[in-house]
Length: 417
Image (cartoon, rainbow, N blue to C red):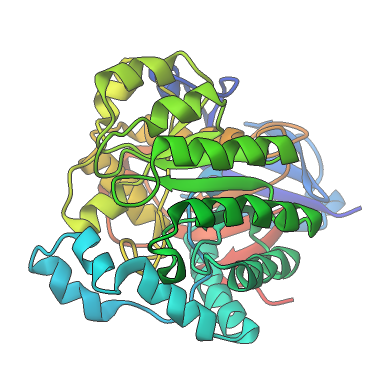
């Protein structure tokens, strides 16, 4: 048995409420001053202010003097695996050309679909692993990742198999989502119903290969309607998939109501959410997953987080890492934008980056808070306090990361086997 002691922690911060953590409870954070954590193998064994054991009985001691400790960060909306990049569209965005117009010109998602189709398994794996390494350095210990840059089955399966292998090989735990209904392939431009039927058939193959746990749909004007999304979701539920949904990014067309009615784990984006849907989601256990980095990069409106929290909604904050609208692995910056632009308080942000996303991914029993008998997914930050972590933006505050009780990042450098 391996025993690790993290001592002299300036302050330990963790949510203490049972998820989904809603509204005012998102600010209910336990603080332990001058604390320590004792880890046995992968699991937290003790938490406290005064360690009464002998350091000679411990396999490894980490001195966390002047560092604060938070749970491992959980990024619950990413598009991790894709081919190429889209920097050539950046000038069009700056010029104000709408995304849907770029899509019609063969850009956007369809551009990445082609590059992903052309890329080999190894190229996709290597590119995604490089991003995962960066995310780990920023303190992300678990994340969700979607397919969706294949659309047609062969490339979708290739993406999902890359994710499966990455999950086996990389310290970050990956929860995998099938997003075949991310856009309409060029082959089906005039055959919408045929493509929806094809996605429904593809769901059976994805399930038989055990390649994904969740199913997502891009429910938006110009992409898939609420009725079309419902057809896909009904099939997904019959096969035993859990649901997530892109909704209300540009316009509200009924996707959020649909997701809530079908008990989706999360509804994501929500910049255009209606007051009626805010009330609906506040009465549900569906997580409102907000993606402020996307608004930042696209110069779009931000989701009404303050109104949602004040209405009792359970919120998560995610990066939406992807090549078109959020090409950044810096999840800490996402959280800092949530403070500055979503007007979320630092304690609310901590809840939105840990226990609520853990709940939406069905991993809250093992991660998302610092508790005895939970996995030791922990991040040590070189910050004066939690407020300083959100206030001092644009840098990497990470000093060390423990994943499953093992030191995987030390002083912003990956720890090699």
